[in-house]
Length: 59
Image 1: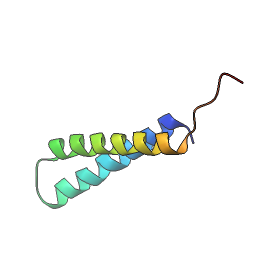
Image 2: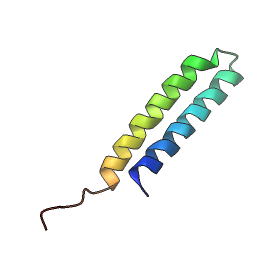
Image 3: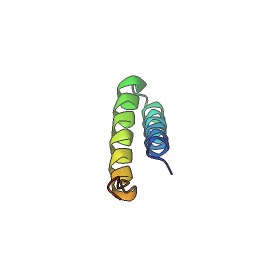
Image 4: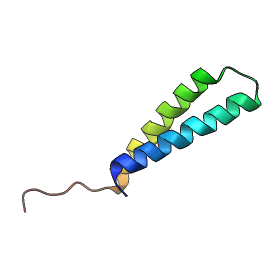
């Protein structure tokens, strides 16, 4: 899986999960979606760095 795809997918999941949370608790959805998207992107970057190994250009 490519890094961009992984980060984009987790950003979308984080945004949708926080949107659902805000709607079910009758809150303003905009701040929750922004924070959820940020956290999703951050988690995606961490997972991508742990899973995807950089290619060696020296060899």
